[in-house]
Length: 370
Image (cartoon, rainbow, N blue to C red; front, top):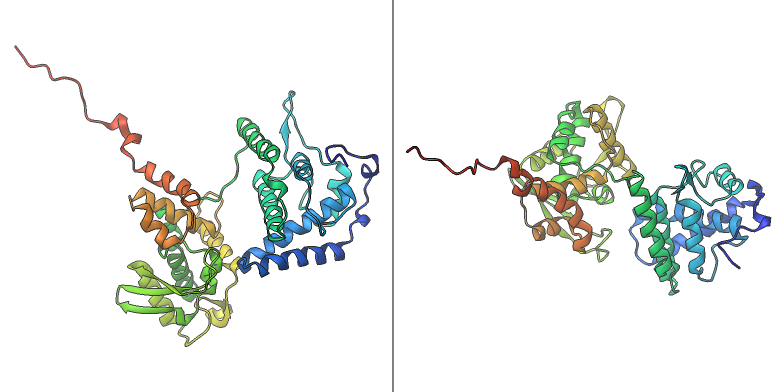
């Protein structure tokens, strides 16, 4: 089968061809393989969504489902051509996904809206497909040189046309302080302030790590220092507890929250109901993201803010303040330098003397009077 050609049979597609129950089961089974492989629980939902999309697209494009055999690299190439828009000579943009298939995916709620996907979305779905192949000990189509070249050129083409690859805004010190200034609304403000400062000052914690913390995971060393213990995380699945420090405002905020909402056990950060009543149920990862977004809106901040903004902002601010990279990675627990360097370098360059050469002292030679 030449996957780069659109067959006549696929030009007219009805959404009834999508067996949503089958697709859900298919994606669920594939996602279970990630769980068995030790993938962090908070990423399973995104994997399931990506695999459900692959199942639907494959069924509509080729009449096959995500099954028991590896996919050829040509299928991955076609996926990119179908979903990434490319600029044409007349200034318009085009992608190869047939309109009937696009409409069927949207009607089945597998796809949010008609049209091409963002570069980051395509990259994520290819990464999920690659990991699924590796877990099954198959050669991954995402490793093909033709695909890598296509992605690289597609990104260049979009960049030249002014299409930026979207990243969440990094929450450096100033926007963080703006968020904290909104945390003056009683017990909810105490909780949100403690959560934001622990996630940021405590090493740029992921939202799954924040909601996974229990009351028993924190202990006070002195009036200005607390320790909190991390267990299983996205990059450390061994489960061994590693203690990280909270100092200054972060330690004080945590003490204030626990004083306002004492608990002997259970989740460290809990839900708050009407009337300021603190419940026993812990926050979800999505609620952490909503807290960041709500506080950013209250602070009047422009940007694309999310829970990850706290993590990227911590690294960026550390670079601004000249903290050695090794110390930053000891707090964040990034495994690879490559992942963290982009944010770190962006921060360190903000403080670089090389950015202020126009502010150098007057170097004009002094002319002495005769």
